[in-house]
Amino acid sequence: MSERFTAAERDLIRLEFMMRQGGFRSLSDGIFLYRWASGPHKGKPKLRKTIQSMLDRGLVEIVDPANAFPNARFTAAGIEALRVMARDRQSLPPDKYGHLIEELQDL
Image 1 (cartoon, rainbow, N blue to C red):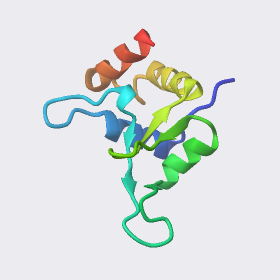
Image 2 (image 1 turned 180 degrees about the vertical axis):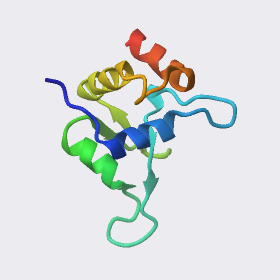
Image 3 (image 1 turned 120 degrees about the horizontal axis):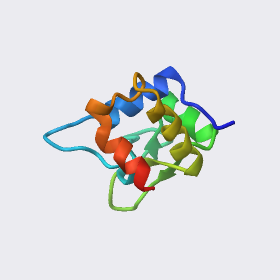
Image 4 (image 1 turned 45 degrees about the vertical axis):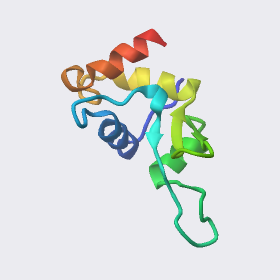
């Protein structure tokens, strides 16, 4: 059985991939992450609990380019979990997330 997202993870996915500033974010862009500004983790990606949960279960991987912001990108298991989520019209309404559903079909 494929992994499924928790309610908090589904909320984060909907928030991250909704229309913003007249455009959509692509799955290949991943989920934007901040960096720690100070302290022992200074400069490292700041992982929210929902991102850490998905990372622990192998649904995302952290990409940390040297000269850009880090992001969490979906792994093959994460893409499969997104496909399961997309089959539930309440979890991922096609009228708002059709771009994401189409992108999933092309992967």
